[in-house]
Amino acid sequence: MTAFVSTYTLPSRIISGLCHPLFLLGVCLLATVYQFQNTILLLIEKWSHSGTYAHGFIIFPVVLYLIWEKRTLLNQNMLAPTAVALIPIILCVNFWYIGQQNHILILQQFSLITLIISLALGFCGFKIFKILLFPLMYLYFSIPFGHFLISELQNITALFAVKGLEWTGITVYSEGWQITTTRGQFEVAAACSGIRYLIASIALGVLYAHYSYRQLWRKCVFMSLCIVIPVIANGIRAYGIVLLAHISHMKIAVGVDHLIYGWIFFGLMMLLLFWVGGLLREKDFASEQKQQSKELDRDATYQNFAVRFKTWFIALIFIGCSIIANTVFQNNALIFERIDIASNMTFDQWKKDESSQNNWQPDFNGAEQQLIRLRNLELKSVDFYIAQYSSEAEGKELISSGNTIYDRKKWNKSSQRKRKITFLDQTFDCLEYELFNRYSRRLVWAWYRVNGYSTQNIVLAKILVLYHRLKGDLQTPLFMAISSEYQYYPDNARAHMADLLDKSRMNT
Image 1 (tube, one colour):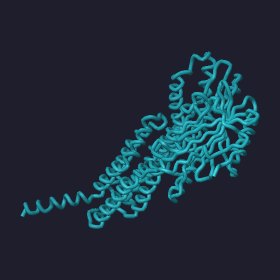
Image 2 (image 1 turned 180 degrees about the vertical axis):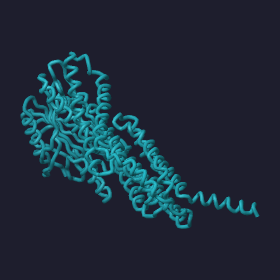
Image 3 (image 1 turned 120 degrees about the vertical axis):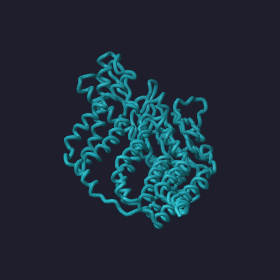
Image 4 (image 1 turned 90 degrees about the vertical axis):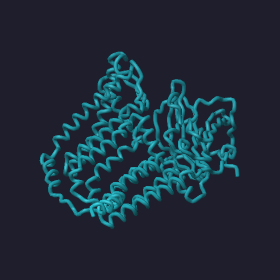
């Protein structure tokens, strides 16, 4: 009888283990890694090659530790899978597909992290999910985000440095991110923008605020300090570096040592920030958390038919959707009719000038690029640049951080603003750049053109590409720019460029 019971219970234990929500959650997470491996590899590559986002390597270990720390609370609640999670799961798979088809890497990464969180909700249930909410939300810090803030942070840092030098009584001249004193020239580069300090401060601040405060206003005040203080501190740091270099006749803080000083300064700043945070801390918060954990009761066992059915149902639906998205849609070719727009355009009273050499040209990865130099009857020259994508692939996209409007090794940017222009009977906003180097100055107008609609807004351009692709009538998307040199007055260049656009015609 004993042997019969043991042989009977062994298969039942195996079946019970296979139906265990945590086992199926692990299977689905492994399936996620396999099905979306390209997105994960690109994420790891970004962590590896960018010092700004290197913190991504420690986010997952931190999250695992935060989950392990809540093991007592987790043991006091039962797993209760919910099919409601299938809604965000299916949405995440679809949004990932949209991001993959349109090469929107941030959308793919955001969908991937949200998918992991949704799987946890589906297999663990709402009670467990509520306990794990903060650790799971912390996964979003692994996404490389915030690159668009760099230029604004550079502006703020340069402003702090220049004002500080002026208040110190040092003669200073600034143009954009270039700062010149009587003893040297400095540039507020992207690495000096303070984006690393800001992201690190926010990531650490979120942890501190979650475990130190109960009241929402205290959390908001502390997180505001985590944003404001690093920005101000980085401006003071930049001022101090320029001041040290100026006083020491360019012997101190001009090489790698100024980065070392920066991290030392950041460490001191975080100590100050947490000291201020300690003044806001509620003294009874820790004891209150312990009391709440004691009041939680263990619920009934979760080994029942309904739980088994829900777990397998969620797992099969998820794996099926991910396989369809990855194998059926992922390799779809994005090829459009190639249009040689340059040959279809004429410019009344402007002629091509093949003899002149251009010292400015954008660089768009994987595009069919063409730069045309034009001269009018008064021998005023304007460069007209077109980049078009008859096909798109990863690293070969119309809108990408790898695309550059000017060579940063040859040119410096003194200003960037929006300007309204008219081109092909359409009035819209473009981005205007004022560039300079030691030899010349140059004005650039740049915009995107999708299905006959022009805009400088990269988000709107991406949405237009997606919209027309879904409609099936997407024409070859374009990036366009015109540029002209000037000596003293940029308005002269603006007049020549506006005249060229006014004289432009599309041949039909």
